[in-house]
Length: 216
Image (cartoon, rainbow, N blue to C red):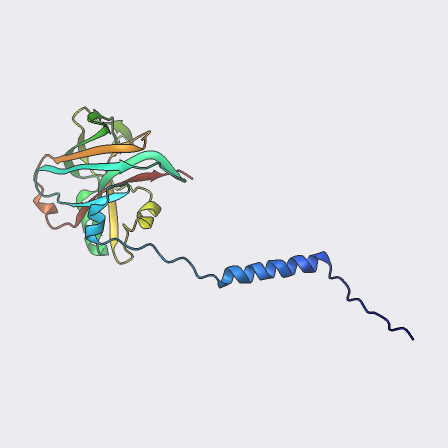
């Protein structure tokens, strides 16, 4: 008697698709999450010349506190072509809160000027600031006069990716000025304080330059 050959039934397509999806899910779950970006040391951050960047500064003495050349890369996804220029206070929660009460919307007289560099030629660029009285942006005069700092923040994820945010510190960014329609290239920033502020002597403050986030 001839042997009867038994052929296993072919599983339906839905079962095959489910099995493939399960295998893909298991494969994704097996991959470890990417490591967090390395936080830069103070020396590494001070050597960075590409936006976003920081520099340690002091706000207690009148005079030029910033004269810095830097490179501005393209804005990238989810960022606007608007450059944020300001300071950020670094410390624990109490120190940051105390600094904000001294700085946010309060008098901080400064001259902020930004130059675009084209070979050996510098071009003074128009900057704006946020006016807390009329609640809108206003153009800085030719001297770059800024009367106050305002609690506004640039996009944070480029700072995290660049290693400029530590999970063990608290930060309070305060804006001084903005550059709209920014083009990639080389720039020079000058900031001059117009009066002594002895009450700001003990603050841990940095210059901060970054792109603004695109509105959702």
